[in-house]
Length: 223
Length: 292
Image 1 (cartoon, each protein chain N blue to C red):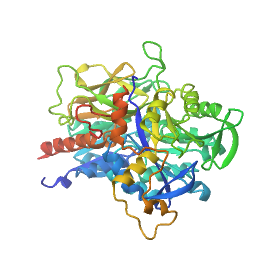
Image 2 (image 1 turned 135 degrees about the horizontal axis):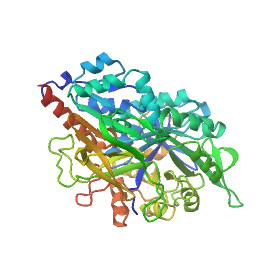
Image 3 (image 1 turned 90 degrees about the vertical axis):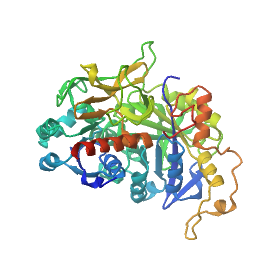
């Protein structure tokens, strides 16, 4: 590798969740990461990660209160690489039904909905969905130009969530996962935006491979 | 079995050492927690739990350095418990690199902390640990401080209350079985797992892979915490350095004796056993790989 430290990644600090594991994963693949809520740092970064654990409504309020809503939209509009993780994926959607209806950033058309309390045959469903689960390629889709490009079909990733995204357009769906019979969209790709419902930074070697490939994509773009 | 189950090594830590007792008492020093954690990560642990088991006595968690060293090299979820009393304590261990916290004593003394912490850090960050002892009349009561302090609280109603307060997961430990290698308390685990809709981690008693399979099927647990069988396998098959300065009971470690009740196995062997018995878990049948 040349000098991967030339690549700066802004990890958005909006007072929610654990940012440190994302920072550690970036460092592990040689990205120079800064945890920040400063819009200047964000706009100057080569790439941005929106992490997040917690509730949708509260997270959107924090983004607004910290004046981060428009810097994030502006950054995405520049076409530079952007990654959303878990709640960071959900916030990209138009709206969520978590604790009443909340508007999201509206980058991806669609809604975030809750897992049903019962399976199709009436069995109980444990929510949150916590643990390792497989990600699958939707039919006709390949992972060639995405951060998933080095993964095997059906790779295991670590999930923690009670809600999942339902994009309006199937075209943005990069992977599908099955939990208790619900086939949900577990990652998306739309132009410069890559986002995953699972936590690659908590998904051992396969997850770190996603960070590594994402770093590679940033590098290709900025050189 | 529709869901992927989890196998979670639990590391009880006292000062700088991994320790293991029976019924959470009579502790033996086993070695450096980080060495064990790295081995478990490499062999396919789904998550890790670090418990500061003397923290409650001193009312503080002292694992910050061990947590931050672990978080830099181990990329699976890490739950930290022991001595966490306040929102600020929780924030500190999360900042050190923990992904979730486990609350017991603090939650019993002040149940509102569950609600407060779930709101601040997200439900999925808050695991409530319930340590249960079966009473002569068959009832299970919750204890704190590693089974030392009687609370008189009945575990099933407490578990439901904890769920309502917004905890993301429950860890149910049978103090009676803990460290004995005689199997999990299936009745206790099943009673709670069937009554709540959040995931339940069974803890205490695993002596064989069969015990793990049993609590996941008959006890309906979503995950199994495992300690002795993994720790002893690591000690038997790897050279564990014994530092001269180690405080505590290291006689066991020097002798390299096994422990008659348990059958040491590693995580690959456990996953393979579960896979062959039709459980879904992070295991690649083609390659035998547990850490993709």
